Amino acid sequence: MTAMAYEIKLDIFEGPLDLLLYLIKKNEVDIYDIPIALITRQYIEYIDAMKSLNLDLAGEYLVLAATLTHIKSRMLLPVSEEDEEEEEDPREELVRQLLEYEAFKEAALGLDRMNILGRDVFGRDHAGEEFEEDEQPIREIGIFELVEAFRRISLDAGQKDLMEIDIEKISLSDRINDIVDELEKRGERTFTDLLGESGNRRRLIYTFLAILELMKLRIIKAYQAVPYGTIRICLAGE
Picture 1 (cartoon, rainbow, N blue to C red):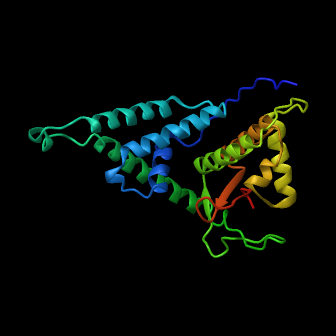
Picture 2: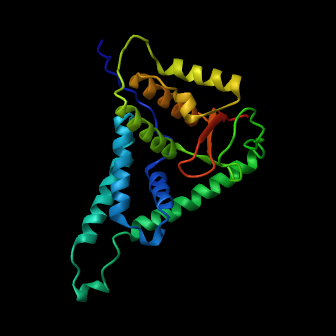
Picture 3: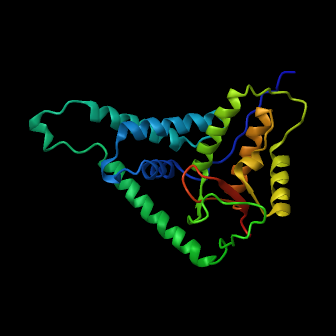
């Protein structure tokens, strides 16, 4: 049976500068000396990954992609010795925006932590589970870590020849309710546990979109101890 076509629109709650900062930190590069070719390539890969999920990207993402491409092309142009001292680094304005944005973001996060002190504190008494990162500090993660994790899972699922059989009727609201019910019963689940092992790629994507929507609404939170480590998800009030 052929799968029905689907299109999901979901507001992305983290903007293009968040993605850019995430890539800079992920690659551990100096914000004042951004390797523009590398960052541009990875940025466009993320855009393509989010488009493949039928996410309705804000226009600002595409504007920044064009800006990065323009900066990259300018840096590839040869500069004469006479103009070298007067030539402004094409990255300078972007770096200024990033530093300004990061400062405001950190200030906002600081206020948020003051208003809800203790909300995100939770114990390590997870019966029946072992943590491979037990000695590592747990940090909250955002949408881009989830997109990257889901992209890896999707690639693995694609290699297993997922069949899109549209027998089960799926809706985003149903998946949202299912996830909340499961977290209320279990307290905490891993990202892969919530996605499940369904052979239906459509269901896999709807589940992922439901997780993103719940994060946007601050109903759930995602945590990770180390990059590429286990992602754990719980209700925000837990």
